[in-house]
Amino acid sequence: MTEHIIPAAHASHGWRKSSYSGPEGGSCVEVLDGHPSGVPVRDSKTPHGPALVFASGAWSSFVTAVKADRH
Image (tube, rainbow, N blue to C red; front, side):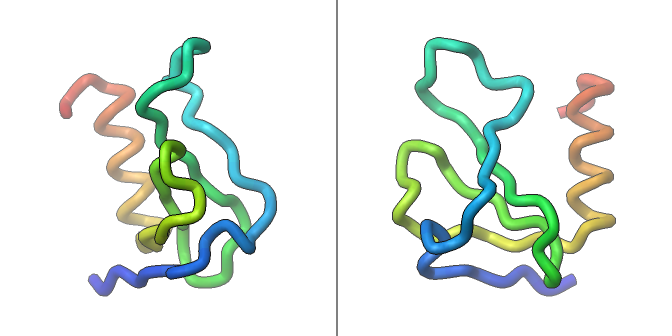
């Protein structure tokens, strides 16, 4: 599997925080739906930084494992 990087991720609109993020902010993961190359993921503390793009299947497997408390 090849991961890609989006250097100027802030230029993309529609980022959303993980549903597991608390209301107090802090360390949050943000994802962008509908990207043609996969699922972009970035750190909410650095929205102007890069985002990693994961293959949709790999991201789905990761989320399933997290929800099952396997990570």
